[in-house]
Image (cartoon, rainbow over all chains, first blue to last red; front, side, top):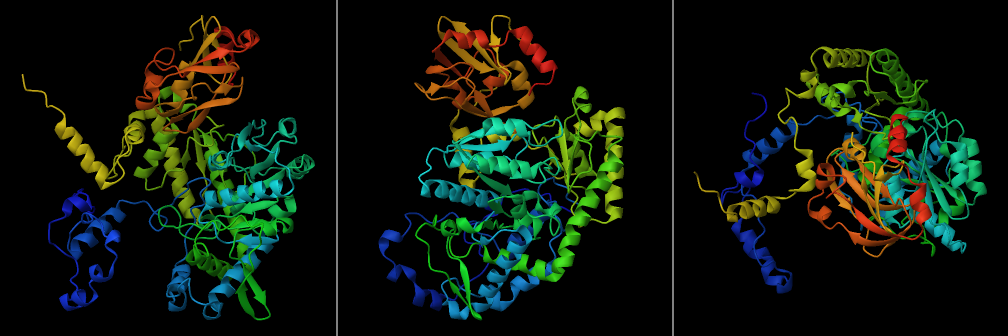
Length: 503
Length: 129
């Protein structure tokens, strides 16, 4: 039994008075915070920390981590998430004392090295995207979107153009796009894609008017297809006085090949935790820098790094800035890792990323399309979408295939998304994978396709080999128990309810 | 699948029932099956003015969140408050206890423009999503 059978929560392993470390009593007496702390800051009751010894803590968390699928343990073809390998060199750089021990309140003269890296990263991102300025503050993709939408709002309002209340999104867009627009109070208009899985120009034009604030677009889109009408799209959007927002989730297909700035996008967010190999998916935090064209510079959040000769300083704050969107300089450790990745590969290496990512995706698609139909069968970019609608008649959904893949040792692809494809299975191999890994994955999916025909119960009951198989998602969503306090409250509630007497 | 003849429908999978000028609204049996287990409903607000074809509510399942569009323009005069505590009734009884709200219709022309059960069934078969 490689994975511990002990499924108790860390709180349930607690034993009063047990400790992991002891502090010298003389030290505690001398530093007693209760002597100096204003009593109003003291909590009324002790915090309910679990009391456990060090070996128990270590075993607890190591065992939890062994229940995980991660990019360090498995192939992880989660579409639109770009789960590429995260080079250990990034971690080495971030662990260097000169970076790991700096404090954000240090005077700028003592963190010139870090500022150099932030500045250089910005220069690179500008070159790579064709944008004029970047804020490195946003902490993730959706946070970048929020920042971008705040910029759009600030821009229109600065011109007295206050009637723009609508944000346009394609029906294949990432859920965070409409969610971000709605969060800022915009009315979301969903555009129906055309038969080729792309933005329908006529549909777009019919919705564009003096109330449109912007179009949010991912390119290549969620179907893994390049929006080939992009220049006409940007022209139409700009003619209506609206702006174009680029969701950088899928930039991994275009590095060194095409630039959103050249396509006419006004604002771009990048996901460093996707495209630039910083940790992703629980291992984060993320980083979602936002790039803009020159005319939007006054609205960018602060601080921004400025170069003066050979030194760096924080730029003076613009009065029109939307303000800070994150404390200090964003997730600086992630910016450092992304910078490491970029200088390790160099410009030529960066271009190869996208070439390999696109070749890997097309290889998988071609080898799989005779068993599972492709939603839009064209040459794809870095990802593609299969449809399992034929299996639906047998009661098998794409989520079941995702579960079955776990038994074969692969993380599930993205399932049931994009919503425009019935029973979608969205696969993004990234450039990290060798042909051998891809061939094994193809064999597994072909085997599962056979199982759907011959022994569907194998798929319906999957996974058979995981420590946790099918958690009750419906119950979890309807009655979320998220903290130990919730657990205790549930237990107390259940204890109070009268127990039916035995007959 | 069940599409009662006395109801009218939209291409976006809402049903509407008419009593005078009062229109009761919910999502169809087809819609509840497609989105699977409903876990949350953001019902319209009482007295809200809704516009035909515009989003008026949100339904969330384990799969995703979906907008619910007003089949007619008018004022929301009744809201199904049971949905808050027990969203599963949308799956259990889509045309009954799982209704979303009642709208006082501003113009009867809106009602006439809605789909009959036959037209809705045809639209589903043609793959209108």
